[in-house]
Image 1 (spheres, helix red, strand yellow):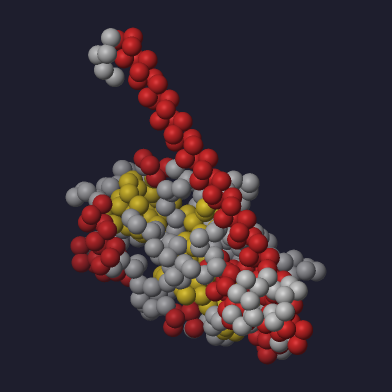
Image 2: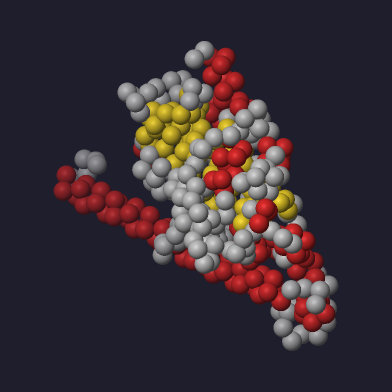
Length: 362
């Protein structure tokens, strides 16, 4: 591939002046910029403008907290056989982060360099406004523009009722990956070089939307379970796809049964702007929205202007964010303690060595 065609391909992948500046500052003359376009768990695929190639992570990038994610920009060395060495991670922007599943308090980057997050929810028996609120809370503060896609619109008999259950500031669009209704909103909101990501629970129809937008069966799909309309995991890897006609780039993600919030990113007030606005009207600034007189939030619940379930969801997410922040502070303190212990151990070893060698050095 010629240099010009490779440069055009990188631009279509989102390469811009800021990324070019970071690359020039951090990479060596033998390196090339590339974007991570798929994460299969044990291996990554990278595209340096000539199409996806298997990448192998080197050095400090082997650490969990430095491992590149789908959407990241990296510096790669010349290919070694079929493998492309990934040797540097460029500064990450607009990342979607959650607490990794399990007991450890560590972040997991779902996708990076994202412009728009399409929150997909199926309008079938598993429609849950509280899950949508939870995802919007996780997106708040990331710089990513959220858009709610109510999928399977062909199965919904009362769209007004569905919309009324979502008192959110994010745009709401009715779409159907099965029939194609409304899916053109995705490339319209993206465009050349801009990146979107589909997030939502298993069975919401994300992969069906991807296939409809691409015009081909790029992702495996599966039926939801009988009885409860919950989905099975059919997408097992995160992958970035280029939409036809310069319609932008779209990342598909596996369905998330759990979206554990990561403090410092999520902000409940931004996702629940109606409740935050009511809180500003309370008589007391430190109102706990309980028995205090002049509580505007409690008055809104009593008058029917605010859904009690939405307030319960807000309170729950506020508590979870506070808990996540405490756990992260504890994790950071333990990590700092471990680093200082390692430094002390090395200093002690050095002193002992110098004593044995008569001060001749380390």
